[in-house]
Amino acid sequence: MEKDYAKGYYLLYDPNNNKGTAFSHSEREEAGLEGLLPETIESLETQILRVDRQLEHFDKPINKYMYLMNLLDNNVTLFFKTIMSKPSKYLPLVYTPTVGEACQKFGLLATRPRAIFISINQKDRIKEILNNWCHPDVHFAVVTDGERILGLGDLGIAGIGIPMGKLILYTSCAGVPPEHTLPIVLDVGTNNEEFLNDPLYPGLRQKRATGKIYDDFIEAFVVAINECYPKICIQWEDFGGVNAIRILNKYRYKISTFNDDIQGTAAIATAGFIAISKLLKKSFKEQRFLFLGAGAAASGIANMLLQKFRKEGLSEEEAVKQIWMFDINGLIVKSRTDIADHQKPFAHEIEGTDDFADAVLKIRPTAIIGVSTIGGAFNQRVIENMSLVNERPVIFPYSNPTSHSECTAEEAYKWSKGKAIFASGSPFAPVTYDGKVFKPGQGNNVFIFPAMGLAIFATAAKRVTDEMLLIAAESVADHISDEDFENGLIYPHVDDILAVSINVAEKIAEEIFNSGQAGVERPDDIRSFILSKMYTPVYR
Ligand code: NAD
Image 1 (tube, protein in one colour):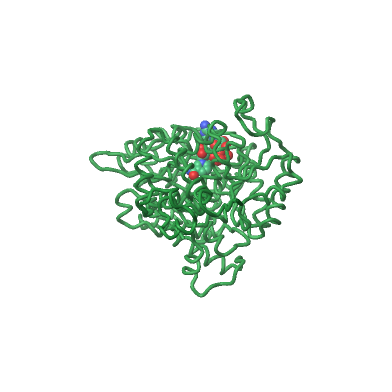
Image 2 (tube, protein in one colour; image 1 turned 90 degrees about the horizontal axis):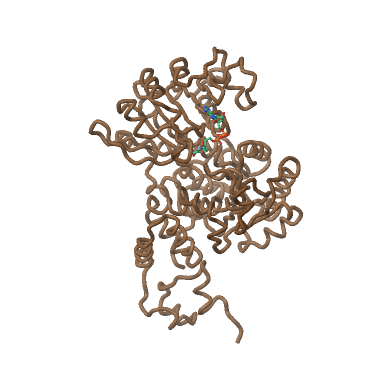
């Protein structure tokens, strides 16, 4: 007898069509499922209840992660319905922080492949490899080379957990249909000695390729994926700082592409500053920023702030005066001879200092942004000086993971005597100071990139522009009310993510149509158009 893979036993092992105990009587009869399932028909809600109860049996987040990935392998609809039922509970299990450990243990966990792996040895066969993917119409690829995975460093191909996790977020937080997404890891080797000596590491056992060989591989990949999938948008993820900036600058004006670490971070930080200026009822132009750390993240945020200042009417010259940087060698000033190209616009004519707390008194910033990777760098003197020069000092320690955060939420509230407006890269629990409960903000890119993905997917955008990202930031900031601010919130609540993403995507899509970047015709009603393109986790 010939096997029918769309029916009976095989249907239960097809994650895209499996409904498990939710198959109706007539479906069971028709597909030959009778007897393969208990007789009771269950709703999706009952199935979620079971998932929830089963998860309670696992103590460690990594085991919950494994369970949920196994669920994704078995039943895509139930997986996404579960995640979307309570994002604040499930996102930390399928993405950060748990996904970091999942990447570190990738060789050990070795689950069913849910991604494309392309090694540098396969440079001339990339199209062939991409054609092996199970879905023919991919619009969105998240791509990493694993060099700088979260704050964990070089994890080689084990970094694939990040693109996989991020694409789960595109679907669960903004309804980007999973069949149009593709996680990819480019294997160029790894400099992680532990992995190179681990028999279970499944990537190339060689040091990272660099220079022309590396660049040629990236170029071959970009060409091949655009040939295979003409509507593709590439989101670069967790590349090393230098490559991240270089690759983005090389391709951003040629193809549809963006880098979430640089541009998504910039957008979410800018959203925070826009919300703060609105809620303090001060013009955005009155803000002055001092960065601790002047690398890739600082460069992305600074450039978006510049763009916002210009949009608010400042000249280029006036705008750069509002942005200052301080790196491992001190304040970035004109007289320094060691500054990189991306730092030059922010090098000012002033006497230098290598004391950050001193720089705060000198420059009198309204906000300090920590992107230095140096835990504790916003010490008591720094926060006290910020409180001396501001009624409400804005303190943004953005370095990840938590141990690298420039200060904790508790320190910021305590040393500023409850005056600080705080948001960090890593999450902090609420803090009680002087009888008042403060809820620390988290500058989580999740309010930006899924909405960008939805807008780009729906409009088949040909380019991702800075203006689209700034509009995303402005739109996120529109979601904060005075009441939220009273509670210390400067970002929306994660459980509202889907509704926020739809609103943000609508604004981005408007910009895509207005700027002539859309690959589809402008619909009469952009919102309804976007809604019609979205994935909803229901059994069909
Ligand atoms: P990077 O290596 O490009 O830059 C680090 C910068 O910090 C450099 O300019 C370096 O000179 C400076 N620095 C190092 N030690 C210093 C010291 N003692 N004093 C002052 N400056 C010092 O790194 P990056 O990609 O810009 O990332 C920086 C941090 O930002 C990381 O911890 C990363 O996790 C975090 N980040 C957070 C998010 C987020 O969403 N929250 C996004 C991207 C990056």
